[in-house]
Length: 343
Image (cartoon, rainbow, N blue to C red; front, side, top):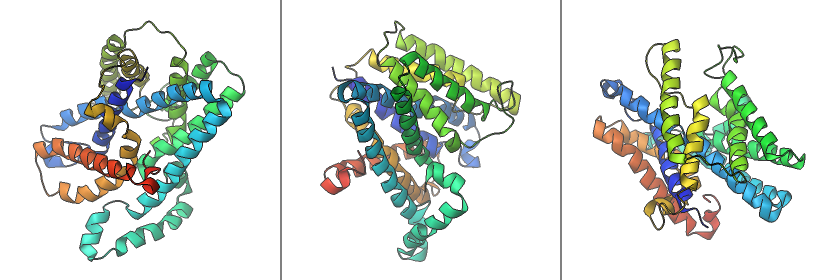
């Protein structure tokens, strides 16, 4: 049975990714006044998105291994993501940052040439960043997907069973927490690594969860788990905020994030027909393309975003980024030579 609900939730998740990157109500101090906590709540609720994408990938990777075998599934999956990553390292190198504003200021396309010419220097001067995220921070997702799938395949080749793989994944996630918000606690190591450098540990965790769930009968109500885990997520995040600065701020990767993401996934899995023949289902099928396309789209629109200061605009702006990204992806899909850069 086709899981239409997974595609529908993918659409919601990719919009949440855009919300994370656009930061409604948090970018400008004039908007923050009175809206700060709403912005933080939006960010916290959106934090399930990337873990959900990894769980879905692990789930369908397991299905692919069952049908095609490990070698074929790995090679097809790895090559596909690698092509996508290399392509967008170049594209984001050209359309880097506020590229449209630079073009308007200089009255020519020279800024695009300057951007791509600066990439080798950035790679040489900051290999610690370039190796983990290329030319745009959000590309850490693809870098981590490649390394996570490769590591998962090694575990499968070593004949580890699903429970053992899940244990490795959860251990990797605890390690990621030890170098982030829990760095100064009893599980911490005393220093913090950037998100992109923690990406491998995050990906292997949620990929292993998806792989485990593909062949596991769990009699847990997904909606109930989701509601309980969302409450736990806010409790955990508020507790961390109090221990750090006393003011509630969102924390994207927590212990409770595991439960929230599983809750979202199980809810979709247990209601497979939700979203059938809907816009959400169609948009979810383009979620990977939207993920990579929205980066230069956001770079272009940021020039205009700062011209308007309004709570309504703060809410509409992420929707505009999503719609324009969907439009570009839908056009690329129709062109044979461009299709592979968005699917």
